[in-house]
Structure formats: C-alpha cells, structure tokens
Length: 303
Ligand SMILES: Nc1nc2c(ncn2[C@@H]2O[C@H](COP(=O)(O)OP(=O)(O)OP(=O)(O)O)[C@@H](O)[C@H]2O)c(=O)[nH]1
Ligand SMILES: [Mg+2]
Image (cartoon, rainbow, N blue to C red; front, side, top):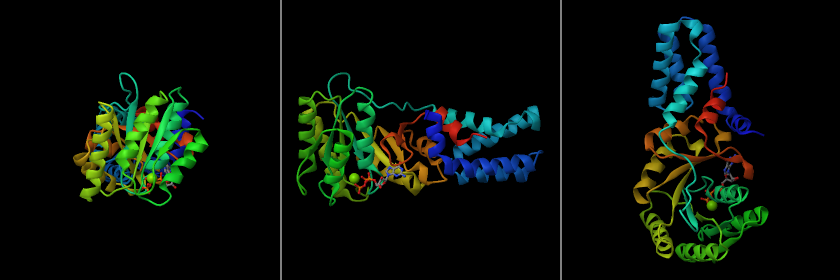
C-alpha cells in the first residue's frame, strides 16, 4: 500500500464525514451565501481543524468565489492547499545525532500509545537499515515490561529492562550503554504514562533525561510526546503542560483511525509550533507513518 492509501485508510472516519459535509454544502448552495459559509465553517471545526486553519480555508474559498465564481471554486482543492500551507512551517523528520547513538524519549499521559509507538519506531528505523534498541523505562505499570519485551520478540529488537519498581533513569542509562555496545543507531526509551499535573512524576522524567544526557552529551536528541487523537483538544493542554516540564522536540499523534476529528493534527501543530513527526493509523507495526503534510491533506480532503 502506498503512503496515500495508508493515510486514506487510516483517516477514513474523518474523511468520510468531512467530505460528505463539504459535498452537501457545495452542491446545495451554488451561490455560497452566508448560510453556506457558516456551514462550511462548522464542518471544518467539527473535524477539529482549529479556528486558524478553518479561517484560512473559508477566506480562500470566499476569495476564489468572488474572483472566479462557482465554476472555478473547488472547495476540496482550496482546503487541501490551505492545510498544507498551515503545516509547512515545522520540519517533521526524526532527528539523527551527528555521530553515534541517537536517543529518543517517548513520553505522554497514560494509554496514549507510547509503548506501541516506541516499538513501531524501532521497527521503522530498522527497516531503513538503522538498528535500534528499546529501553523499558516504565517500571511502574503492571506488565509494562513484558509488553515491551513481547514487541521486541515480535519485531526482533533488543529490549533493555530492569525490575518493577527499579529506577527508570537507571534503566535508561543501561539502555544507552547497551545500545552503544551494539552500535545501534537509535535507542527508544519507553516511559511510564503520567499526568502532566503530577509534579513528582514530571521530575522523575527530568531526572531520566538528565541521567541520559550525562552518559551521552546531547541526549536525549528527541523528546516525543505521544497524543491520542481520540481525546481531541484535551491533547492540546497535555502538550502545553508537558512542554513546560520537559522541552519537547515533536509530537506523535496516535489512533487517528479511531476518530472523525483527525483535523486535530493540524490544529495542534499550529497551536504549539511543534512538528507532528509520526502518526498512528492502526495497531500494526506498519501503521505508524512519518507525517507528510501533503499526503495527509490529500487523504483528509479527497473529493
Ligand atoms: N487503533 C489504534 N490503536 C492504537 C494506536 N496506537 C496505539 N494503539 C493502541 O492503544 C492501546 C494502548 O497502547 P500502549 O502502547 O500500551 O499505550 P501506552 O501509552 O504505552 O500506555 P501506558 O504505558 O499504560 O501509559 C493499545 O491497545 C494499542 O494497540 C493507533 O495508532 N491506532
Ligand atoms: Mg506503555
């Protein structure tokens, strides 16, 4: 399956609802009267595209209509262009240290998809010729270590783990040592789910990053916050608060296959000025994909 098809399949819920609405509005109101403009606005906001991007799309549609009339106004194409433009400010590639090991810390609130995403990322870089190691730094939740080990077995990625209740920073430290010994390109650190309001847990995360940085200057090279798309705009607040405690380098939005509000990716990137680096479109390893604004916009807004 090509990237567009993957995005298309994963964004099906958002796409079918949004496209259906847009089609209904344009076919019913060829004149684009005030009521139609309002409906257009409502449909875009319902997909969680956010006020800024919605405003851009509506303004562009109006402008186009005034200069070219209904025949020249392709709402789908205009919306695609505006979505791509509003996403183009941030660069979304997974970083790579200038030399040696690249350490990527995966953080977020409970259940957003951190463990699955860490495993999928290890697989993703592995298929591109970059060996990875996983560090099981969720030493808190029952079965969290086994869950990551199982992924490691399934994807043939080595997993560094300690015991339950052990210090996550110590496991991360051991992860760096093991990854360097194996000459791995990437170390993905799976951290425990935590609420941004729990100060002691945020401090634990800061300590983990400090310890890793002491072992390998420059690390962690990426701190990626995993957000669950089905939580909608709650994710925005999570991201703001996490970013205050541990500076983030990017976002990963998971479970886009489970929501009709996939436009939240656009709103969140615009609000936070943090790049969305990957998106999760399902539970299989290949369902994690690098975020490509053009493919995303095309899949979201195909007619
Ligand atoms: N449909 C869908 N499910 C996903 C996606 N990403 C993760 N999941 C599922 O979400 C559930 C939680 O995933 P985990 O990786 O365990 O989440 P976590 O953030 O590590 O959870 P905690 O460690 O408990 O905080 C699992 O059932 C995953 O299969 C996705 O992109 N799409
Ligand atoms: Mg987990």
